[in-house]
Image (spheres, rainbow, N blue to C red):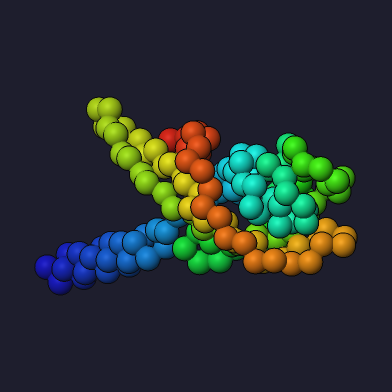
Length: 160
């Protein structure tokens, strides 16, 4: 009887340990491709930030390169942006700078039979210009709320 009880105790401890490990590291991180796609889309319609990066009024960027330089907690971070100005007079060939970003997400779980499927939708909540590297342009702090865009920022079916 004691042999049976000790194996039950070991099983209980293993189950408790597994549960504690799985519940502590469960925070989602925004995928790099989602950051790149949504920033490219946002900078097409971010005239304040794009203008501050270029030093002259522009409507946004026609093309944008995004490189994540630092990841923060709770889906925040810093990205280096290089963009080609769109619709402006006397614009430089390209404008560059660093922006802080913040993302949030919603998740929806659906079930078909025994299979569960979780769909995660990411949203870009804030952009804040923190540095400008365009030659001849002085830094002017700008914070902008990105327009609501239908970017399809879904983490396609993260099954659990």
